[in-house]
Length: 269
Ligand code: BGC
Image (cartoon, rainbow, N blue to C red; front, side, top):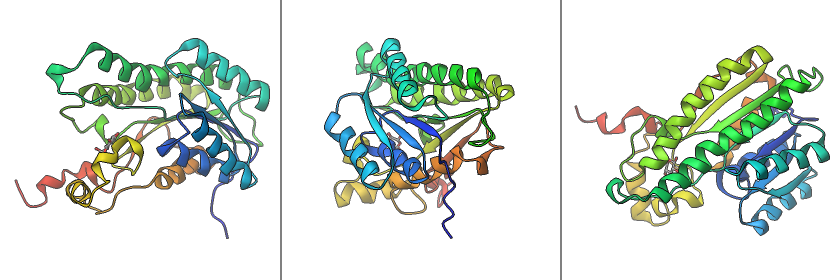
């Protein structure tokens, strides 16, 4: 028996779905039966490749370029999604980046870019999705919820990260953003859930896993002793978006091989 929860008939938008975690999420949602908008910022070829992988497997998807920190581009993306798919059932706020620097050397541009994409992007996309969920309401044949918003956060919503204060601040912000809109939207039958991935093998952290030495060092932070894969997160998103998770809202699920367990204390303290 295939235990994958069915999302058939539902429409999903995944931001930053041309690579990394976003791509893994888009593939998993399509496999569960959802139609998926593959948002990307720059890499059209990679976004098209994600679409092709989905359609080759019998799924439905299209790619759309939009910078999630630009209001007009976000609104144009939702308009095109409604034009092609009629509505939205699942939003995955995944687009994010790092612009690392020592705090004292960090430029305002490095700060603003990360806050704008990682945090303001989630605000702009969630607002458009919530407006549509409220307008349309619950469609029971598809889901018990009027809509689901999944906010990609990080273990760095709780683990401080020297040299990455813009990134950690954006993820801490996502935590309270997610909880506050979950509280406001629950009466509308809209669920909002965060995911806190640990180290997942993607381009964003390539330097941390692409040599045996780097990987060994990284694994000292992961009690479960393996790096995560985009498909780990993809399966979690497909489940969280399904009615099997209908009673979950306003919380972050950490998926990190134990990175948030303070591994430095295993033989110290
Ligand atoms: C960061 C990665 C990092 C991981 C664990 C993620 O949110 O984007 O670069 O490897 O957290 O520290």
